[in-house]
Length: 359
Image 1 (tube, rainbow, N blue to C red):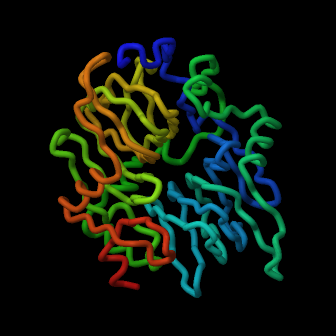
Image 2 (cartoon, helix red, strand yellow; image 1 turned 135 degrees about the horizontal axis):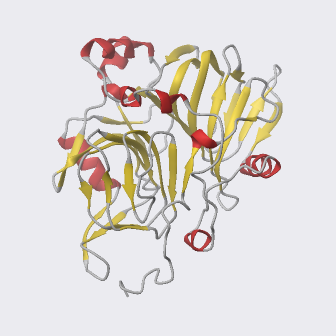
């Protein structure tokens, strides 16, 4: 069975990747000063992912996140207001907002770019607290279609029959493409002192989270940011300086390359660099994943279920990595994970002693 798995699938390596630097910013419906680069929409689950740009002075208004959301600050600076507290969100800050949370505002103090995963729809509120508008995966799909903006395929079958090159085009480059984006997750002791601006416990400056390692892959460092014991969802930062062995994604996964050049699957020989976002549908296989340069390859990763490793096509499994293994890696590295203080959900979040001591 292992030799026949995905027998008809001959990947090009570009079908699940999209270069956000070659996409245009599209005006977000009903949100002045906010633009989107749609990346993926799932009509089946309601999940959708987008790059979001908020102009200085503009904001995401008060909202209830019906299915939760997580965000990465890639550039700029924002103020986040919730429960009477305000956090300053600088580049490198990651946050998780659980389902049914009400957020007062997310306002850009300077032009800001973010990567946001919306787990379901968002209900934006007016001054009276009534629903003014709702943003859903259907809205993002309609926006992409109206502007002929490509979206990544959601399934392996779609990938197998899709010929669009989403690494081509002429668009608006992301800020991380022209900067050393490794500074988003790696910092000096002096730079770390700034994390005191993050006072909400469900946000963390990723620079303050220690690297954890899988003993079987010592050249690959992990910052474990979130583990859901309910869904198996794991959020990571990966510093990838070795070669990952062959593996299959038993559930979907997505990645945003921050620094370096990634070579993966049967992808383009030159690899993919900063600003490329990759979605791997359930069942996708990597015969190898590695850095193609001497620089650190650093990327964000959301794993929505386990990875199964082997030693080549047709060979038996050598390991399965699920949320339980990633939790063990974090604990072994002293990277503290704590229950989400904002909800009774089963999420464990990275904890920064620097930030929380300031709160």
